[in-house]
Image: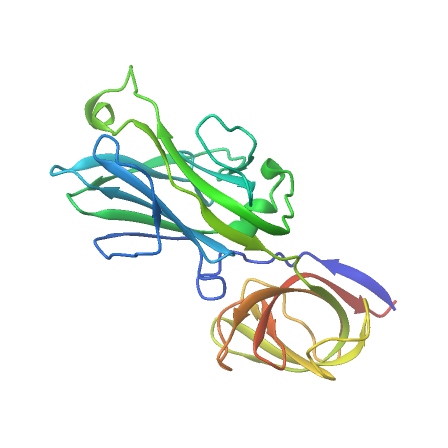
Length: 283
């Protein structure tokens, strides 16, 4: 038999699996945010669980403020935000340029900036996937390990040639106090499998498969069988076919129920993202 490669790309922005990449406006408080000093009626906040990062802009003035929120393209970009990673023992000040810059944008052909009006006390919050941004070429395929300090910056320069509402958009620069963040090397597995059965589940197909061997080693938390799901935009796998399945451990744990994702669950309900799949076919 030979291998045919199918391009199964991990959907890192799966709303249920990664619980990242969302956008809200409201007044709900979150005491975990690390905030900047207010400037021109706004303050900036950041918080992370080491996988996702929450970015908040809050109106602390008595009047409405118009702000740039994000950019709509084939995905969501955050042109006015920037993450900065410092050494865990760094003494951070505005003159210290010894940090790793993480851009929250990427290549795009077409785009549209999105603005929002924040009322007094109202807060805009974005939640994004850190590892998704790290893994992009624009950030040098960054693969961090260990403890860092994270600072979030937000900046918009005054627009000289703008008209209408765009002349009223907030301008200035904000920078949060640092928060600690710990990055661990992701564990990866590669299985040679044989599909036992599969069943549609509305948003995709759920499969059960026999593990023929673990390609990269002998120890793993799956036992002799594995169950995994693929979203409906992926090619259907044939019962009885053999494949090589690449998995990457997340720090997420399920509750035993199926969720819409390209993922597998280990014996302790740990969630593993599915990456590339190689399918064996008869010559």
